[in-house]
Image (cartoon, rainbow, N blue to C red; front, side, top):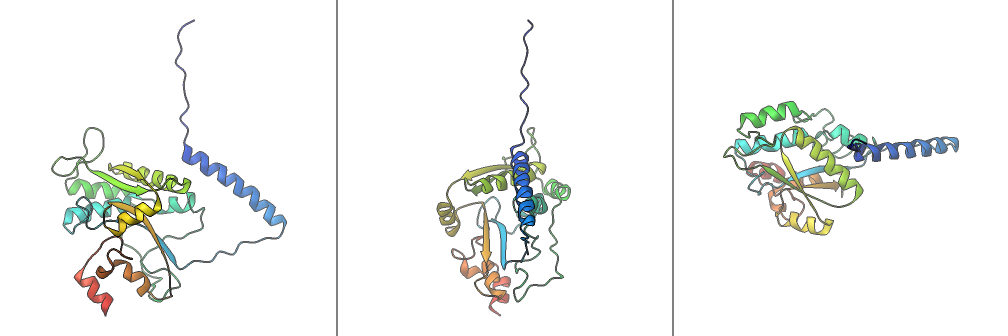
Length: 239
C-alpha cells in the first residue's frame, strides 16, 4: 500500500463559533415570536473604543510618522464586522467621542478615519514602514514593528483579538497579544505602561464633558487612559 498523507481540514474557529451562535439565536428568536415577545432596541449612552498609549515610544508621540502609524492601525479595523460578529448587530458605529443622547453629540458629524486597509497600506508605505521578507512591516530604520496588545482570556476577548489580528495582518503589522486579567491591564493603563488596550465609557451624567474628560491632560492616570495631552485640547476643555 503506497504511503498516504492525511489531509487535515483547516477549521475557521471564529466562523464556526459565530455560525453556532447564530443558529442558537435563530431558534430562540422563533420561540420568542411564538410567545409574542418582541425586542425594542435602545441606544445606550456609552462608547467602546481601542486605546493607543500616547506615551509609548512605539505608537505614541506627535511626529508625522507616528500619527500616520496610529491612523493606519485605526483604518485596519473593520468596525462593521466587529458589530456583526461580536455584538450580533446590537451596536452602531461611533462617529465621535460623545454618543447619541448626550448633550454635545452632533448627529451630522462623520469621522474622517474609517475602515480602509488599502489607504492604510499606502500611508505606511509613504512613511517608510516597509514590509520585510515575512510580509510584516519594519520601522524606517529596519527594526521589526510589533504592536503589543493587552487583552483578556474571555471568549469575547479572543474573538476581538482575532478581528484585530485579521485587520493588522492585512496591512502588514505584526500583533503580539498579551493575555492577562482585567485588573492588571487596568493597572498598567493607569500607569501608562502599555501599548494598546480596549476601553469603554458609560455616561455618569448626560453631558458631553463626561466624555471629553477622557482626553483631558489633567486626567492622565484616571479617566484619560490613553495618556493623551494637548495644550490646545485642554484649553478648549477648560472653556
